[in-house]
Structures are given as structure tokens and as C-alpha cells.
Image (cartoon, rainbow, N blue to C red; front, top):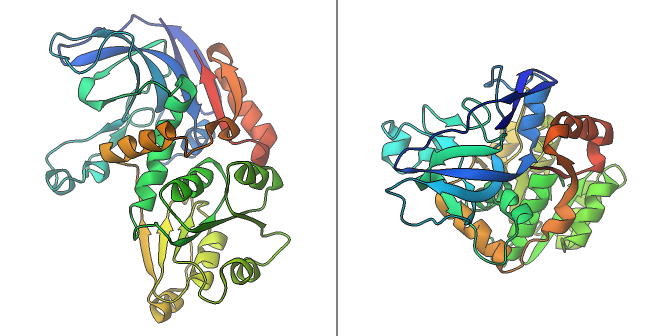
Length: 339
């Protein structure tokens, strides 16, 4: 089979390798779609702190069950599936207390261990998530980033009937905003500096879109939410500037959820955090129940995926997907690889 290997930053080689054998508790997936995410782009640039080379990428995935082990009973040949790419030890304190997504020894497929950027992929059946009728393969590959959004939303108070701000209208910010709406938020405001991304957010039904290059965020919050501001702010960029915006514009006693990935150390006004009694929480990845909720949102047509996926590339043009992302910058959202 053909496998894409990032041998060095910015360089992908295609290798012919044997189709993997599976154990009695595994399945073989015929990979159909692979999403390219921001963390993959960090790997492409050689700036991911926890990834070495060569590496086989691919963690936002959908495919079809090609083969299954003798002990696999809940999946059938031909089923549409996705999977959780976490590899955890099961022994550390977080794992023993149900928090395997923050395992002390966590590895993620496509970063610290082999991902699914190949024609076939072998994986333990208990990591595989069935995709019901009504979901296509494109949506299936978006379940993973949507699960990130669902988990982030669950790190705060129940969003139902709440006013929500999302800083950053990239793929994850967009999905956080859409999921908030789908989970009952009263109103959602999303901000960015890209009109392209804000236009997509509008197409996806987000109530208010604010370009902070042209309007002060504080003015927009007052205009749309009034003096009581928002109940929850989700920081989905990963920059000091947007964290500063969150802290400055947070209502006293409100929640700030850190979703964005920070590549650099930052400064934060902790005096203001203390004065306002802000609750700042991190969020990492997801658990199975977040996948199930993500699929439920998709199945009930609460998420506009067609607008989020902005480009497709064939498998043998994998590297060109990165070139496209580099060229377009903030003029694209989710780029998908078709196999």
C-alpha cells in the first residue's frame, strides 16, 4: 500500500509498505479522508515541540472497515467509521480517574506515533467510532475537530441559554461557535481579523461576526450583549493578544476557556484575573462521549460542514495541500485529503 511519510519539515515521501496485519481485537480501515489541522501545519514547519521525524500524519480521519479481527463484534465490514487517535497508558493518575485524554504518557497518532496517512490503517477496535447513516465521509473526518469543540464547551458551565464569545474564526473557533449554538446557547459572537472566515461564520449561522481590525471588541460586546457582557469566552487563537482581549472583556466571575494552542510563552494580567475572579480553564482533546455528542450534532444537522471544508486534495498531492494553506493563509478553513 501507499503511505505518506513526512521525512523532514516540508518534505513528504510516498513509500510502498505492506498492508498491516491485524490482531483479533483490531480492525483494518480503508482510509478515505484525512483532514489537515493546525497542529499538522506546525509539524510541516518543524515547530511542533512533541513531534520528531520521520512521521506518518493523519488523525482527523474517516474510512471504511476493510477487515476485522475474530473478537470484534460491534463493527461490520463496510461500516463508515472514524477513530480516537489517543494512545494512553491506563496506569497513571489521570487514566485511573477517567481522564485518559490527559494521560501522563499520552501519545497521539500522527505526532508521537504512526498516523493514518496511508491507504489502510490498523487500529484497536475500541478506539473506532461508528458513523451512522446520514453522515458522509467528509463529515466523518470532521468528527475529531468537532469533538475538540464539544469537549471545550463542556469545560465550562452549561452553554444552554448563555451568551458566548468565541475569539478566532478558524476551523476550531468556527466549530466551537456552531456547537455552542447547537447545544442551546442564546447568542454567539465570533471575532477574527479575516473577513473570509467571518463570512463563513455568518453562513454557518453564528449570530454576530466582528472584525477586530475595524471595531473594538469591547464596543461590539456592549452593542450585542449589553452591559452584562457574555457568560463564557472561548479563546481559540493561541496568541497573547487574544488572551488579553478575553481577560479585559470577561465579565466579573465569568469563564474563559483556553482552546487555542500557544506556541510561545506569554504574559497575562493576573491581577485583573484576580480582581474579576475570572475562571480560566484549559482544554485538551476529548473523550469518547465528546465524539458521540459531535456525531449527534452532525446527525441532527446542527453543524454546517459544507462551508467549513474549503478545499480537497488527492492523496498523491498531500504536500500541495500544505503549499495551498501557506499561500491562502486566512483565506481557507479545513483542507481535506481524499484517498
